[in-house]
Image 1 (cartoon, rainbow, N blue to C red):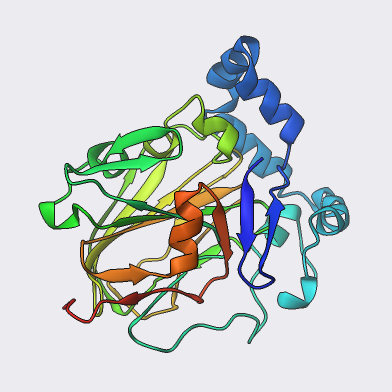
Image 2: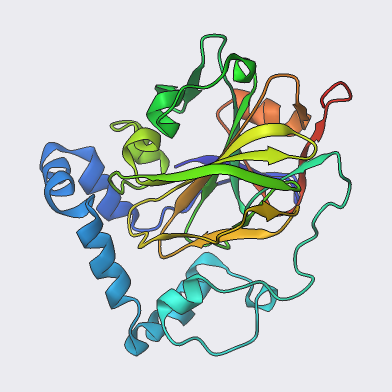
Length: 292
């Protein structure tokens, strides 16, 4: 299980893995990995799961899920849900998240567990137990001004709010989808698979007002039916970029060297392999004075 630091309460806790026993079987032994490769990690299984969770009967799962994961329902719109999938993509009630209005603040793009990694001087990114090249993740090479920059990994678990936002004002330069499998993004999968290069993902290359050109990436995961991104040629800080359907997922942001100073607690925890729990809109760093 992952160790997580809760910034709000200044406490540490262990992640509660959704479907933990099944994942241990699928990723922890040879037979499980055969079943995973042949049946589970493909899109068909996730589509079947999405269909099952879109029925009226699936609403019976909502109350036990809320109780097990301690979801604060007062944070969300007060309405009746037509299915478990409808509940999973629920929207926040007005005023339930505080979006930093300071233009120089870098904000979290999602309710999530955050790790921060340095992009190496040869353009490689050490994430969890794997070393990635940029091409493996975004299907293109990074320009050298990203070397020494940061790769921010926002891991969303099933209990998180599954809508995500833009972290600054700006405009879209280009975007693309990269086909792949749908492994879980929980720590157990990273021991066996390079999930950030194998999973289905959406890559946006954006020009921001305060942080220059950056990459903002969404990565699908086991049980995720779709990554839904809205069409937006321009956007503002805190604007909803899209949402994930059923399952845990990940957002990734890559920024250039010298652009931002990440908050000290996040850096310190990341160096120890500890994720920091963050909420959408909260400050996670600040623009460097010399950045343009």
